[in-house]
Image (cartoon, rainbow, N blue to C red; front, side, top):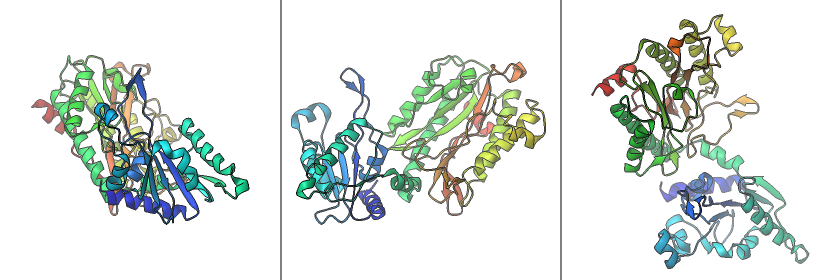
Length: 434
């Protein structure tokens, strides 16, 4: 992502804030995995969205109209001793040179400097309730100003959730963001193809997962979330992540895995037979899910409301369950009573972006919001017929199928970013045959 993109975002946010305000956002903290070993650091999405800065121990301050510069970054100083162990740091010079900061100060000096930047501001835009330690520090800086009230100092009188503006900005992706998400989806699609090529009866789920990880890392990416690699009955567990069972002949394998590149996620699910051939029952259920997904994707267009794709998918799935003999009754009545829920218990999609379940309201004023160009969402209907539903004939048991694609809303319709991942039964069986 070019620095002009980050600068444009900061300017847009500051124009929404207006003068007489300031925004303060913190970088993600490092997390301990065990003793003195950390998890791999991943920057806070909001912080990355506005800065592209990839280090912890940093604080972003935006002050619209400040004559000396509106973008201030507090970050770690250069430290040759620590850099021997942990790698190079940007330091204050790098924050200005490489990240466009107007001013940069050592993070250790924030208690002395930040209150002065907030003094006299009417509104303070911030994120509260996520990091209690940072909340405490933020209130401390404001209280420093309040403590000088008799000397004429004026602290911000209003705390405003910056997410109100920032997350609406993040919901509409720019052309550069769509391009990056397309790349992430293309890498993930290649990983799904690889999984289909290598899967054989007798393998473990984690062996297939390893093939994903290898492809992601070859493209300098990583898992966007803990992957689901569920064979047989495990494919009916919506958030199955153990990924340690043996894959048996005659079972299906459901893989829900996406790649993250430069903090942008893809999210793809494919389901295919472990032995490369769909059985009659598997084929019948798969046809229903695929038709539901295709019709739901077709419903994605500017002006369509968010829930339309879900309504379309539910109708196709419920009719399919009737045709398979798994539900009985009048279609509209079955939908109204949610008789399909033992087999389909989740929504048909979610926003996608920097977070795999991305930010943005689904309703505005109590009504489903209309889709707009630049929004990206998943379409992921499924059917899960586990052996915990005893009234179902056993020949249907443990058929769990979900098909998920990443779909960008365009000016004249939609674009399926993950189209390179095979999903017709013929394409899957042909690929697995080689």
